[in-house]
Length: 73
Image (tube, rainbow, N blue to C red; front, side, top):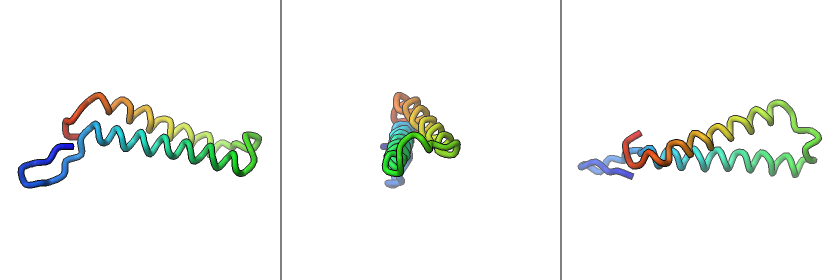
């Protein structure tokens, strides 16, 4: 995390990548947990599959941003 001379917060690429990874991973885990609670994989529908794909995409995007370091996003 970088702070400018006046104390303004600047979002870095590493922090943005970590946030994307956490949100995507948490969303995917929550989706699978909810599906397990509701009755298993037999009723895994197209909307759930699309949501899982979006969450997986967020994780991949976040992981690609992590090595870019502390440059401003």
